[in-house]
Length: 83
Image 1 (spheres, rainbow, N blue to C red):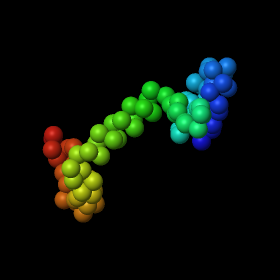
Image 2 (cartoon, rainbow, N blue to C red):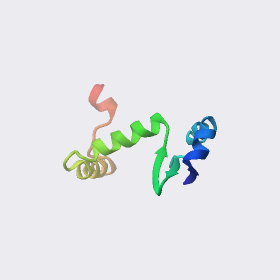
Image 3 (spheres, rainbow, N blue to C red):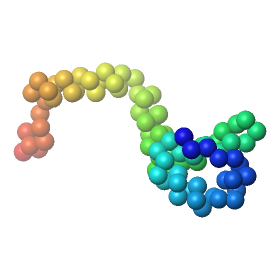
């Protein structure tokens, strides 16, 4: 992860905003031994949505079960469902 000091961030905010769009992990801005992460809004929304989905009980088991049904031909395709 690309890291900069808070002073560098203040002086180069435009550059860091552009770079945050290219760095999937974001930019770490370090101040007094603490890090703050600069990421795009799209990345923030994606992370938030993933965190919300992970709170759904048994979601991963349901996804695995659905994949197995699909792979064994037990699942219906769109044409079978909607004609």
